Length: 187
Image (cartoon, rainbow, N blue to C red; front, side):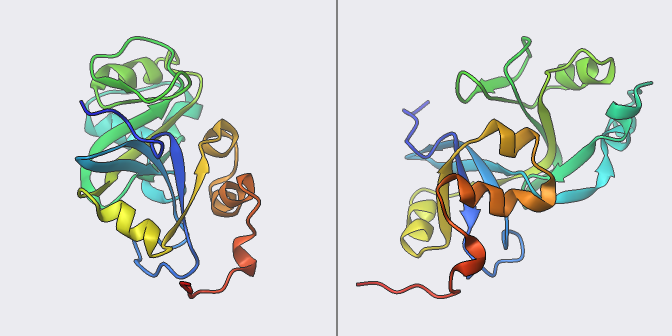
């Protein structure tokens, strides 16, 4: 794998002018960014599913209400049938990618088995689908002022209510998105 860039482990915060319905007012956690492109998971789009629904689709059950009722997010428009778990790095999982000392993403069934029994990571977000950018695409979108970047915050990722994550993520870098105009100027 290529060396990760400074954008890995960052939050991409949609600027007010970004009109793409997939990303408008969205916050995406960048799991990976490099010469091959970028991959991330949106962290503030609620899907119509709960974790209990996903477990049932995989012929698994849980007796824990907090597991059954846990929200499942829309990670992005790509491969919406595929699940991803963004989590604190407790445990050893079959297919896991360590993003930082504090965050990993796992795509294997074993983490869901552990979560169903209450033995999964302390902090976890389950998403369906992911967000992806081809080589150079994200860099161009950043030059076009489509995104604001901020360091990942575990508080925003795991504790902030979904509807507050867009503004909370921007506040990490001192930006009030409501006060920004919806157009960009270039000198």
